[in-house]
Length: 464
Image (cartoon, rainbow, N blue to C red):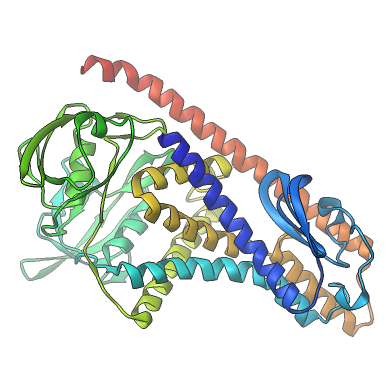
């Protein structure tokens, strides 16, 4: 069942991100009276679809994106195919003023960015904004980077990696992208400020190299309620049900869901006795972590909520959405910058369809609908920004060509259709090479996971 949920989540997330992007081009073209000959999800040969008016809505064979074929625009003919019929002059894209062509081109990325903003905005209005705890250390894991740096329980982090008064999200994000790299921080302890340096431990998480600090924040006491229980998981076999309130793990009182996550990960090799409250009953269940079909080791349940939330109005919800997306862009930009400078390998940073499928499965099976829509927002934002890169075949490349045309027009020079097609072909080859790299990268990660799984089996069976 978890595999089916993951597959459906992948189809929905990738399909929605592509359709939203192409709908941006499509709707602006329609509003400007430009003919849209084809609206395709995927590239290559047509698999199926229907014709409505002057537009052929289709699903094509190669599910790595999509396109809108505009009347009179033959610059991508090698990829999209020639127009199927004569287009009236007043409906041709190539004869429109540059400002109209610019609006049509920019509308795709703009729709992705708006989607990325809309999802956390609506979530904040309906559910509320998560109340992030203050950066106070509740626990330092033995042998961790935090212990080596001299961090102690009760310390309050007042500066991290140059950022004054950081949030936990900021601290975790910077550490995530800095495995093995020393980071400065300042903690407040007994009224004094102490300067320290911490080097996040390099770990593999889902096949990706990430930095781990070994710090657990003080979330306070929050009731921990079970949300979804996966079919066939250790949690279901133990008898855990949605709505159960977790009280104890191996005799240790449960204070919040982060403590539960940490405890389960730290005791994966042993049975875990779980005391739950179900209505007026108090029950004791026993479960043991194992590797599930999506490749992750867990019990197989999620929480009904992650952090306390506070209700906010439209202005505060909009501010939350903007902050969330700016933080994603900051971390994405930092990761790409590390690739360019050689501080981080491309293999640890880039992911293709297989990587997205794995992320979709984890998001759906651990976070439910909230996880699916969070990943959709993340992917939509990155798709919108990626398409603005000045690479032929991308929207940024088309905008660059418009700018070149405008400059050449002042000198009375016009780009020929043959030259435009050649530029697009070069861009298409570059994108194919990039896609080949990320797919190969994904496959190598999967092989690495399988090998790790095989290596771990003897140790796992010896503990039974």
